[in-house]
Length: 116
Image (tube, rainbow, N blue to C red; front, side):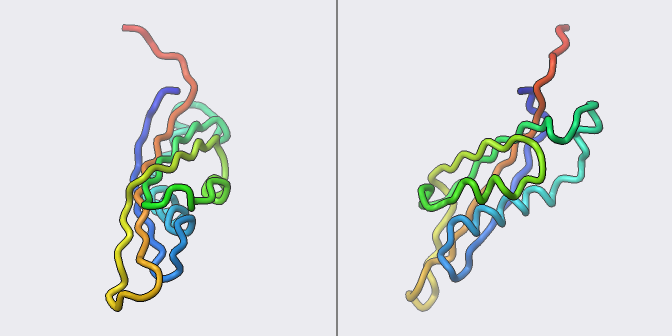
């Protein structure tokens, strides 16, 4: 895969303690930062996009990877969840912490590289 674009996002789950919700919000945040039509620029179909989704949260095992993958309307998403992000305790000390997920989307295509 020839990597062409990296975009970043951050998502939260403020009260529910839902790592998947935070991850999905982070992916959407990253997607909305990107207004480049890469597929058209390089003569590919949108379905040809290869997307590496790196997500950092404090409890990686709590993220439903299929729900994250479902956010993408096209392309092939490889979702990888890592230990990272932040769990911020509630000010009152009760209930779930505020969960923060960090997301990096790397987008590219299978293409031939020109040798110089």
